[in-house]
Amino acid sequence: MFAICAPCQPFTKLSRKELSNARKEGRERDSNLLREAAKFVARFRPEMILSENVQGIGDPKYGGVWNDFRSQLRKLGYATGSNVVCTSDFGVPQFRRRSILIAAPRELARPEFLEPGHDGDLVVPLEDTAAAVRSVRSAIGHLPSLPAGAQHATIPNHKTRTLSDLNLKRLASAKPGESNVYLDNTPHGDLSLACHRKVNAKLKVRCFTDVYTRMDPDRPSPTITTKCHSISNGRFGHFDTSQVRGISLREAAILQSFPQDYVFYPTDMIEPVARMIGNAVPPRLAEYFSRYLSDALVSADDG
Image (cartoon, rainbow, N blue to C red; front, side, top):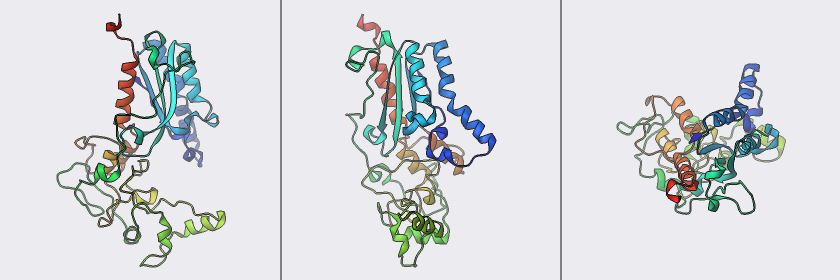
């Protein structure tokens, strides 16, 4: 199997912000990596190919990279399939919509795995029917409590980011699963951000409603990003109101479906570990499609 996952930054809204010339050149190179990967497929002829990226990579505004890669695979004799899935439908306790592309040599693909009426197209399942939807509480509710800025003595990566006194007041006023409308009227007064008030007034709509908020304990988590440790970058506050903190790195990893005993290094740092966790393909999702591709291949036992 070739697992081909090019950097997602060139295919996201954030990629449109002002960049230095060097970073622009880097993004352009990154956006072409899928096309370059087809050369390795042509050389080594893998039996299975799995590619995962952000939901919007198939949008024509990003240069048609996703469809070009799929077309190249078809020309090389592969049956291909592509769809947008949500990880919560595959047993991952997280809402995370991703584009999935799978491929296998056309002559080895079982007919029952091909789309009816679409010669050469593999079916891409939208759910794992054997997996239940998991909530945040069921995934991380068993872990020991921590204050902000603490690290658990025996559980690797169960480490949280420090919070300023102002952010402690903000999060202490937040209720699980609700927006940050509460910031306008807390026991400590109006704690909303001046920059947010300015944007809201200009656009006449409330923006950035997930920052400084807590997760809903009875639903899958929001998308775990490289800033999953920061309550100012999304709905990353712990759902337990007795814990005034963002989620720990260990909790973020579990919400990504990593096993609890999987250790990220260096264990005493936050930023590099958060990048590894946020950039990862959820292991449970990768495992499902790896097994699915394996089942889609004709075996020697089929005669």
